[in-house]
Image 1 (cartoon, helix red, strand yellow):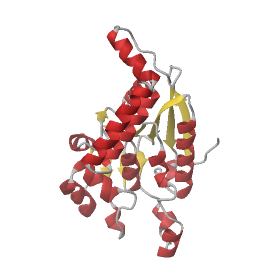
Image 2 (tube, helix red, strand yellow):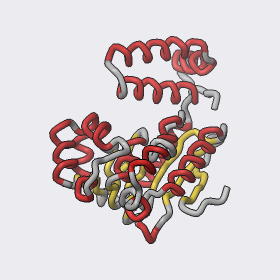
Image 3 (cartoon, one colour):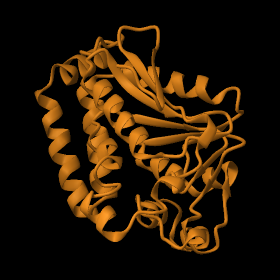
Length: 261
């Protein structure tokens, strides 16, 4: 498909490749408007349906992953507009339905909705120049795409309150210490490292990869006991797959497994 606000590419050398989505509103520092979020959701679901894709990367520019939601677009909205149109929930939440792993590659700023979008991904690879923040309070609102929910679950209540109430930004090093990001890398190496990680994910059995993501998300969004129940049932279900038989036989016989992709 042809998009106006994102770029798409397919990368990788194996049979199973990585879909790359680049946010592309350079004049607006990738501010997230309805068109961009509609197109992002469409691209995500397209890659999710594509059997030749095993992992997805979402990234922005060198200066900005995304500088936030598009304030110019929403400044004249009223309650009837946002509630009636199911603003944010209608299209931002599409990423939550993606079953394949999604890696956010963040360079420059990830602010407001940009930070929230990165947190919706399964892991964040950050360049050493990355900065994360939730500045919504400075324009008279609160974070509305998960910032008050995912951020404290990730970095803890105290740091989340600090960021949400004082507009303090977190640099890449602190974000890694707090568990917000998976890896911090030089800006010229971060995409290379993310693609290598994605290729590694693509080399494993698809059912095990998707089940792992489902199990982790279950405990992230529920109690420990509920999460353990989901994990156990998914673990049991793996014993009905060809990949389990192949993987364990390969381990016992000291050979490389040939998983179904």
